[in-house]
Image 1 (cartoon, rainbow, N blue to C red):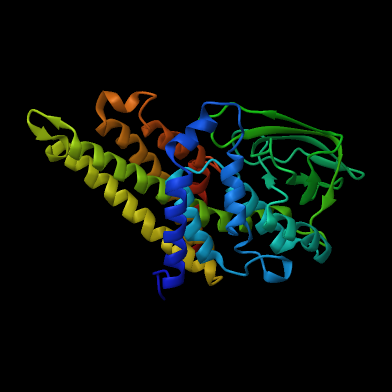
Image 2 (image 1 turned 45 degrees about the vertical axis):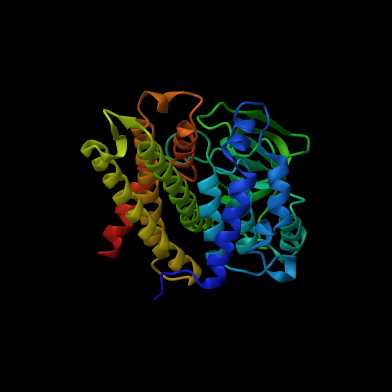
Length: 367
């Protein structure tokens, strides 16, 4: 069992870090945050041209045919740079679902277009805060109901919608978001650099995912487990960047003739931040191994990675503001960018209480 990335994967990570450090700076993030732009289209086009959207798609469908580990190192760098692009919605969720459960015809139609960036996809599962409830329903061939929040739902070309058939069975349905019967509205969130939307369906045409009916809730659990590992890497990337920012500031900032970083109280904060981050990193690496090897303990590894990475990113982004003192709370400093993203990612694919309950349930089952 090897928890280190290969030389090729580390090379991909270094190339991604170099690229994003130049093309996804804080100014780029603010250009989306401060305007009505839903995402940075120039950065997205460059990411597509680099082949990141095609990374885990088989070569037979126009992809690069690489694996989850390569996707993990990309996810970490996207999190480090706070890239304002719809990558997670389209790659972790929509692409993965079609790869796993789509019919041959659906895969042939969607995967090459997702790989080339021609299409952006998303997953519409939630219908509001709290536990997952499915009131959206298929009547005939039309979908009726509402979904919110839907990540990148305002810019996606299609959505995989969790809905019930007329006989009440949950399933996944492909819905073109540009057709009649679909209306979208942008939601106000903590982090406008990654947009969220409400989707309302009034008889919109919907196509069942797969050649045969699948258990929609079981498929959703599997999809969330895979995405949880990838989101964990985004979170540890963001947490590492916030930690580095706090360290750099306190080494340069002086008070009473000493660097702020030399004060014992600040050292304690950084020690706690470091421990939380390293715990999350270890769990994320274990999750990556389980995901890439299709290990039977993936559900437990994914929940552990998700919980620890969410806690770490929140703690580090919050303490980064604190160690900056009064300046850390101002709009001019970039600390709030990481705090915003930490809050947003903590609600992706389920909130922290949901994942803690999942983790506890799986631990008890394993025992």
